[in-house]
Image (cartoon, rainbow, N blue to C red; front, side, top):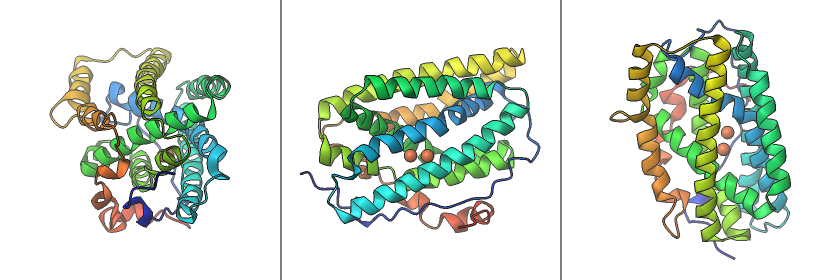
Amino acid sequence: MTEQNNKTQSVSIKPRRMAFDTDAPMRRYTFDDNSLISTFFYALSAMFPDGERFFIHSVRHFQKDIDDPVLQAQIKGFIGQEAHHGHSHESLNRAIGNMGFPMAGLVEHMQKRVAFLKRAFGPDRQLALTAAMEHFTAALAEYLLKYPEILDKTDDTIRKMLIWHAVEEIEHKAVAFDVYRQKVNNEFMRKRVMVIAMISLFARIGYYQFRLLKADGHFPRWREWTGAWRFFWGKQGILRENIRSLRKYFRTGFHPMDIDQQALIEHWQERHPDVAALQTQ
Ligand SMILES: [Fe+2]
Ligand SMILES: [Fe+2]
């Protein structure tokens, strides 16, 4: 049995219930009226509920075989957090759908994909996929917590939800990975699945964005293309930074705790008091 990384042992994972106001009016294109950036977040939000339930499913399969009480407690925290994320994003997806976007159709599309993955992938590969996706979400989370001012351009509910989600993604980033290490521990599969996961993730995001824009009959203006280019690929661009982090995943022996993101979530309540104020439990 491979041991958990030492730093993981000290992480306690706490699911938080939040009261987001998803009934508050939102701009059609929440991010700075930029349809290309906004639909990137809408596409992710459409994937979250069923994607995160899939993560839970893949970890649960191995849960009964985990003897380590610390990892057991972390698995419970992970399941609680991902379940809350799913519910919150479902409410947000309804709000985005109420503006006329085909969110229900995208969610249905995602559900079919998840059902396919459960049929086609064995438990080992499902868990490798979850570990890969958790690395991607932790990298995205790191970006949003490092540059939270970027979210000032979005509507308040989305900004708050993404900050809370980001904190918890970093908190539980190593759980699926540690289960994978203890129960599967196949480095080749881990890396190969990451390649497949990223190709299909970005293809899906692009396809969902296309569907959202097409349904709205909106062709982005020049200002949106240049803004999106800066946002994704410019200096400090979200994807440019994400790729740097993805590369680390391919190092043999890599562990998520090798990337120190803890400073970003320590005292997050003081740094984001308006988000912390929404915690009900
Ligand atoms: Fe999540
Ligand atoms: Fe997660």
